[in-house]
Length: 256
Image (cartoon, rainbow, N blue to C red; front, side):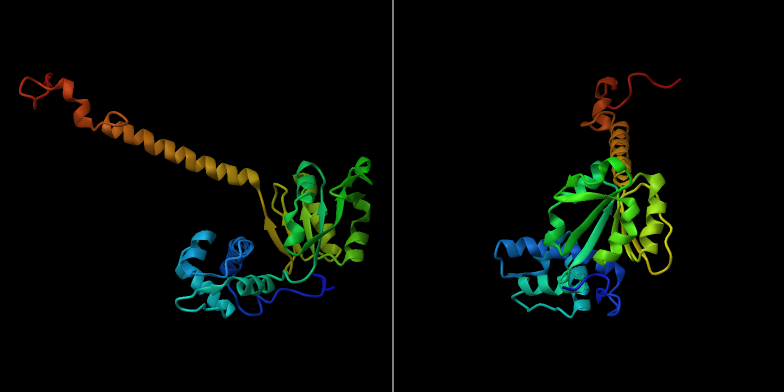
């Protein structure tokens, strides 16, 4: 069985833009849902809507894959699932280690979507001696002293960091020194890595802060609208109706 240490996805060598690579998992998720419903073909418009992009961008992305669909028919769902899976490197086994088995790390370990998408959780690692040997998601937690040995034994090239921020860089350095070339970082800190190592960061607090910004902006827009109109649902003129003079168009109180 091939492992991630000896095979790399073909996307970079074929010159597929990073923005397109970032959208390929969105297309694959939508296509997989269609496949599970036994849908044989899909139009670019339907697939773009399901993936949350515009159809012109989708067609451009697929042109990098050499897939153009058939006019009046659309794209073959099963073929696209295979094609995108191949480009993303999901037609082979990718052993993964998760470092930091707290609440988040344990939740990641129990996530059932890894195996179905080509990722095998090879080991769970934690610095707490009390965690050593405890089963999580069917795997015994191993101590960080074994990190390098685990990476070598399993041919791991993808590491997931779910430690506190203060420990993340040290863990990252050890993973890289052991041969890890791709890291998914859940720790709330920015990691420093050498050239040739890819890091993807997932920070839930940042995403929530961005949503809070938009909520505040929407609330501000609503407040401004109320100020402009005088009331939330009535125009300013209607709000001044009761203050008109006897002729109906002159304020009852004139400025001095």
